[in-house]
Image 1 (cartoon, rainbow, N blue to C red):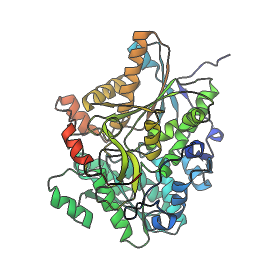
Image 2 (cartoon, helix red, strand yellow):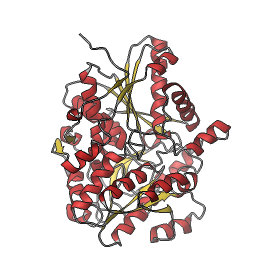
Image 3 (cartoon, one colour):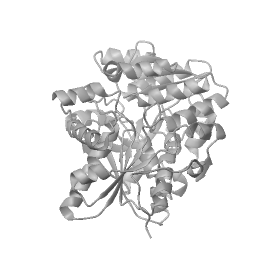
Image 4 (tube, rainbow, N blue to C red):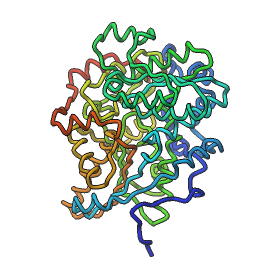
Length: 457
């Protein structure tokens, strides 16, 4: 007999996963390797060492180990804010008058305000274990930079964050949180690196992009003794750490005999989406179950829905490895009026392969619709959502409305990646009616695609 389902499903501490799940182990066709941009040969451990921490390289290259144990120090840190709740959106269901059941996994209850802390503490831990003194990174909306700053403050590591200039100017308080945790924060592109100076000379009025900021962070790491570069999304190692989201979801749903029909996540670089769907997709890959998976991205940065599946640089300065992914081109810079986060030009290689194989669907949504959904959710469910998360909220509402129209009783699960309290300038624009939508033209995208590197199959 099905148990009565509470408003919030909490797991006990001893139910929190002790292992991360590596979905690549269950993929019959392994993801395309990272390539050396000079030789177009697969990157080796030794070639990646100047940029990344040793243990993170091992995780990045590991396509066979299904479960990787979470070290005790990371696990104990997780216990400060995990397990995170799985919430039944009863109020939203009632408002929409839908037969659908809507659940969301809420990752915004930690001090950094988002899911990003799950990987930040892991990457910081491995840097400290290696005897490093500091790390560099990039951040767009600021969630990753905040999380990494918090983790580094806890671990006693130095942290240098290159923050996309548009967000740096729009979100001054996000910058101050990073500085409070001890991080040095530089708007990108800047004149402090060769990559930044080159980008500024070519685009003097640019608001920046994650690709620009990555180039500066990598260059700084390579030129600073005792430092390595860490990344908040896109790479397989990050998706591995974020699998704790999906593993907790699966445990909570199994506990109450709940099976999702569709799983929805916002998609920028892929860390949240990949972590959320990981154990469910694993079941599907093993032939144990079937689900529908939906990636939701901004119409102003539509990597999946309008991008090309090709090898591309992970950064604008073209110093990082080549990754096979859905990409808009590493030179693509989203419009300066885009306020909803998810600004990266490409997508995680594993998720890109799933999309190419038809295992994952995708949709793109204009930011004015996203913020309308965010306001609706905030008023009825009591949480001010991050703009990134609100892409998933909007798609979940659309799906619930379709269920009302068809009478289908679907169970919907989506990821609520964090809170939006540092995004109030964007909310102000929406509330004032001054927010607009900016969608790249086909001509603009073709110009970017023309610069994709030529890599033989």
